[in-house]
Length: 328
Ligand SMILES: *[C@@H]1O[C@H](CO)[C@@H](O)[C@H](O)[C@H]1NC(C)=O
Image (cartoon, rainbow, N blue to C red; front, side, top):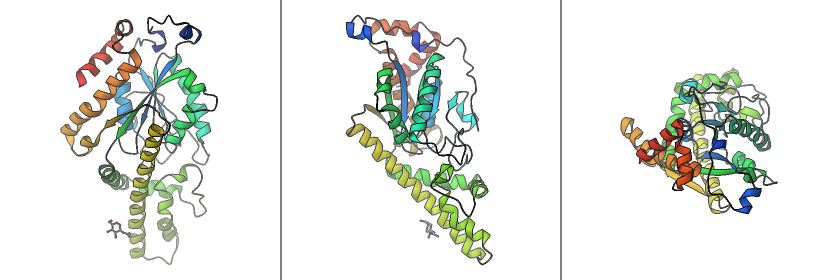
C-alpha cells in the first residue's frame, strides 16, 4: 500500500499565513513564528490512526506515520496498516515505503520526517505525526542541535486505554488478523535462514511463527504437532503484542514524567468497553471532541481574540472550530 492521495478539499488556507497578532516583543521579532505540528501518541491498538484521521478531516492536514514497522512495504495484515479506505483521502507519509529487508533507524526516521514536515508546511497544511514508536518520535523531537524545537511548536496528544482492556482488545485483534490471512502473509516471508533482527522480520507475528513454518518444511512433523505449534505461535503473538503495549506505555510515562513533555491524555477506555454506535458516541465525546479542542487552542491560541478572528476568516477553519466547539 502506498498512499499519496490528494485531498479533495479545495482552497485550503495556509497555516503559515495565520497571523497570531499582538506580537510586539523584541524577542519575538528576532525569532520568526514557529510552525506547528501535532503528535498523536499511544500504545498499539488505542486508536491513534483514528484520531489523526479525525483531526485531518477537521483541519487541512497530512499524516506522517511514526510506527517503525509500518514504514516497511509488506505484511499489511500482520503490521495492521490502515487501508486506503480508512485513510479517508488524507495523505499519509512514511507508510509502507521502505524495502522490507532494509534497516530503517530512528535517525533515518528523524531526517525523513523532517523533510516531509517541511513539505507539508509548504503546502499550507498541518503535519500530524502518528504512531507507536516513541523512540522515533523522541529522535525527531529531541535532536542534538535543538533544531526541531526551535522550528516547531508541538502539541502532544496521547490516546490512553486501561491496560487490561487494551490487552483484551489486542488479543482479539490477533484473532482477526489470523482470520484475515495473516498466516499466509507471513508464510510468504518465511525462509529457514531468516534473520529476525533486521527489517520487517522484526515485526511481532513473524519470529513467533518460525517454529510452525519450520515444522511445515520438515517431513518428520505430524499434523497434530503442527496444530499445537500454530496455537503456540498465535499465543506468543498475543503475549508479545501485550508486552509491546506495556513498553509503549512506560515510554510515554517516561517522556511525560521524566522528560517533562506536555502530553495531553485522552482516556479512550470507555470506547473499548462498548460496541457499535455507543462506542462511536463515546469516541466523539471522550477522544475526538476533546482532542479537537486541544488542537484548536494550540493552533489558534483560542481565547486570544485577534488570532481567533484571523483563524475564523477561513471557511475550513471555521468549520473545524465549530465542530470542535460542539463536540463536547
Ligand atoms: C494458548 O493459550 C490458551 C489460552 O491462554 C491456552 O489454553 C493454550 O493451552 C495455549 N496453547 C499453547 C499451545 O500454548
